[in-house]
Image 1 (tube, rainbow, N blue to C red):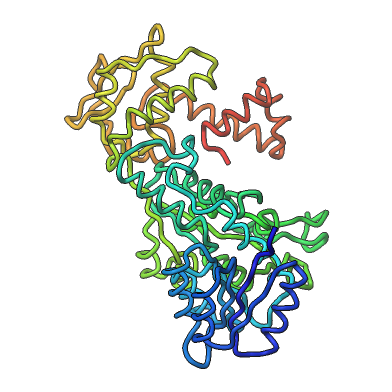
Image 2: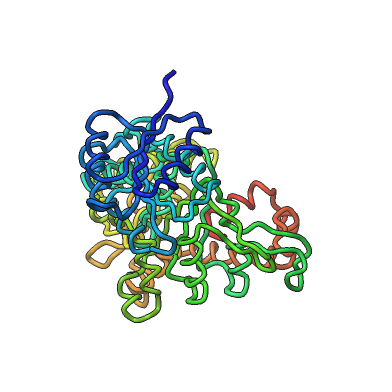
Amino acid sequence: MSKQTVLVVDDERDIRELLSITLGRMDLNVDTAANVSDAKRMLGEARYDLCFTDMRLPDGTGQELIELIAREHPETPVAMITAYGNVEAAVDALKAGAFDFVSKPVDIHMLRRLVQTALRVGQPAAQEDEDVPASRLVGESQALKEVRARIAKVARSQAPVYISGESGTGKELVARSIHELGPRAMGPFVPVNCGAIPSELMESEFFGHKKGSFTGAHADKEGLFQTANGGTLFLDEVAELPLHMQVKLLRVIQEKAVRPIGGRGEVPVDVRILSATHKDLARLTQTSQFRQDLYYRINVIELRVPPLRERGGDIPLLATHILKRLSEQAGVSLPTLQPAALEALTDYDFPGNVRELENVLERAIALCENGVIEPVDLMLESAGGHEYADDDPDPDESAEDDESLADEGNGGGVGLDDYISSIERDAIIKALKETRYNKTAAARKLGITFRALRYKLKKLGID
């Protein structure tokens, strides 16, 4: 099997020699060029598995080469070599199509990890739209096809991706798909809800701590960045980060290293950052609620997830898929969705999006008779203001109430199921607190199995 070949473009002989020696020890062939002209000629004569280019060259810029490679040699990942701390150049390179960047002075260990990740990009070949796991993104609408194509494209890069979209659209599923289709698929995928971590614990959770660094630190602890090393860290609801953490997060992303609380030195981390929120981050930067420099750093590539109302044609496929999964989880036969019930679903606006559709169908499975779901079992509010139910709705119930419930993951309507879920949630949280978040003990206290508790935690969205 022939060796893979790397092209190094830099006008500094020391850098060319350092990279040549390091890459040679990784059993790679290395070609070098000192300027843009030579690099263009060599790219036209041979196929390269990876390219490194300096930012400033005697007869042009590395940005020119990145754009050329992205346009004419899209199968070749390219990494920009930047001056230390030149974040703007790194971001511009990523936006132009660079796979990643490395700062001078070059850290050999980081360089090796970057090379290993980059060389995996070419192995599976370009991912096609249908390769995105069907279990994650169900539907055949044009809007969803565009999302899948975008996922396949950004998965090959290491650029930070900002996933925008309303609550319940499936932003975490998109993030998982990006991870699974990329060169980091064998590494960990670590999701974290930024709004669920108490402010005083954030630094320890993200960056870790050393034993004795504060009261209660009885042992060394790795943070989320170290847990995700070699893989992907998904920052869900990133808009909820307090400003002091935004500053620290920005530095970690730029330096690719974390300093645990109480630690004397920084620990290198090799992590791809994906982030998401249902809020308007651009507007939050204008009101100084979110740092503009961090916004531009995590929003190198934006991927918008469409709301369910923009892909209404997907509802029949989604409903079938969700019903199959829910019935398997509940251990019951797959229910039949009557045509009138399906029509009611397709006519409904779903302010809570796919999450609300899941809750509506889960409720319908519990309420339906003889495994047949009728419109009345859906308890949907129609555009005209009435429900598909036997009785008129309570006039005091408002659309705003429905939307807030949908955002919380409790379905689009209000009723007995929501009330019971609220009681369940309170009881579980109380048991967890009383057992200091020991799930086994909490399950025993609640009189249910550990497996049942784990299912309820996921169902009720308790992190």
